[in-house]
Length: 160
Image 1: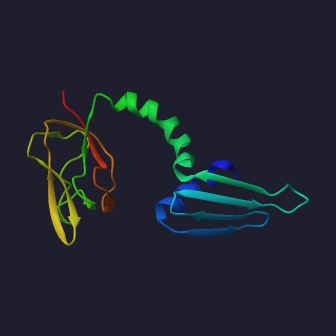
Image 2: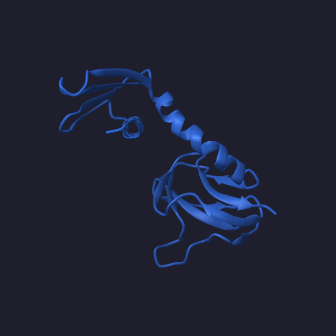
Image 3: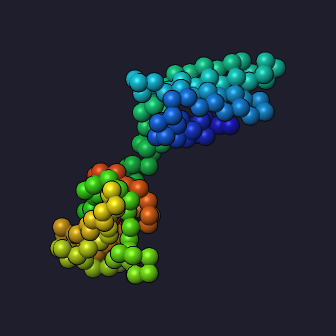
C-alpha cells in the first residue's frame, strides 16, 4: 500500500464521519482515528523482518491538501472564463423532471435566465433550480441522482 492509497483512505474516513477504522492486510495493519480536533492518526505496523513500525499524525485537512493543490492550477486556468452555477440547497440532484422525461439541459445547450437546469429533492420536495445567467452549458459537474451540498458546483456555463 503506497502513500497515495493511504491518503485516499484518510480522506474517505474523514468524509464518512467514522471515529475509527482498522484495516488489516497480510503484512500491514492500519488504524485511523479521527478526533474532535480534525486530527487523524495513522499507525502502520509491518513485521519486524520487513521494516520498523511507522507512526504518524497528520491533520485531516493537510492530508487532503497535496492532491487538491496539484489539480487546482490547471483546472482553475481552464475554467476561469466560465461561470459556475452552484447548489442553493442540500439535497439530491436530478437532471430530469421524472425518470421517463428527457434531461433539462445537456452539454452544449444554450440557456437563458429563468430556464430550469435541474431539480434538487430536499425533504420530499422537488425544487426547480433556475438559471440566473444566459449562456451555454459547458460541463455538468454532478451525476444524476447524486447527493449535493449547499454551494456545491453543479454546472459550468460559458456566458459569451
